[in-house]
Length: 460
Ligand code: URP
Ligand code: ZN
Ligand code: ZN
Image (cartoon, rainbow, N blue to C red):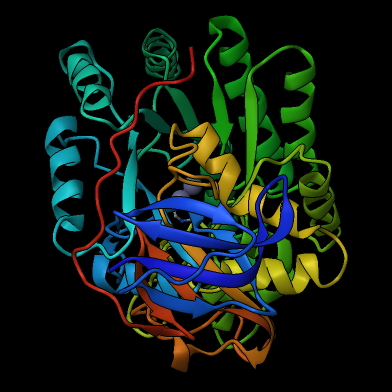
């Protein structure tokens, strides 16, 4: 059914104005000051509300075999959580094990989304092995539309690459014109620090942070950027958590490296004291890189404000407290890493970024939607409100007052890292290609409506 959104204040990465938007055949077909409702159209009155382009989360895990368990969401719960929070496109990390065939992994991850996704979706393809016999498979995967790689410098023995394989994979990425997204922490340093801490009987979640200090992350960023400088490969540092790591990336940028910085919402609003909570409560806040000293948060907000940091993602990695985080009761190294946030991201950025005056609305849209679309070959189909763009729209009510709570969560996880926090603003209508998929915190859409977004390489 055609859809008309009237009287809303349209806010994109570069504009802020009042107009009506008419959507038909899944796309935006008219944007005018006043549009009379065409016969048969659904009409939504957005007076007093913002209309944003659908938000894009460029770093999520929905299906994730990791640290001896599997993340809890699937594409039904993951999509629902995303949509009620205003996110209409997910970019998931395909994370196979080092024995798995890359093409089989790509097909497996796609099969997990097909028929279940209610958001549009695409993938970054992790390179966790790169011997000659499998290299052709990565060309095939890029040709099939997953036009970005993911590499891990962390997780020794599980996901990290040797330097020789990292170099070769980044060389191929340059040839293919795909950006390499990277988890940057020095795996060997972490391994040594973890062994020393456990050997000294320091086993609780509060020791996760000390096992991966800022310098370990900064070293990873420096290392990746050195290879990028040598090869000309474009790189995107995921979940950049601290001043030292941001500085390394910016230093590389000044040397001419094509490097972009992502930070994720937990690092903006949570600090290391959460992971230090007693009674094993800190395990809920174990992620990697770890939550940092609070002083780093201003660096991240200012980095977004100045646009040095391109994107605010989530790194949604959902593990339950009672039976998964508890696997690390006797050793913090066995706590599955992750702080689920896909439902909360936009409202947290609005509450703690926009309403505090740290960010403008336009910067919020740029960091939470448009830049991801631009960097990952989705713009202006996604990340824009233009004639011809997909009608992925968020009618956002800035006057909503509430609190974050696990009881409102669509994710399968049994806790909310932001439980009881004040929430200023909420997505009141969320559309995916012109169909309403969420209203006022409820999923009202169609499971399986989501489409795979085939992307072309853009990073030559
Ligand atoms: O703690 C995290 N970040 N968990 C998910 C895996 C990853 O490193 O992105
Ligand atoms: Zn990571
Ligand atoms: Zn991740």
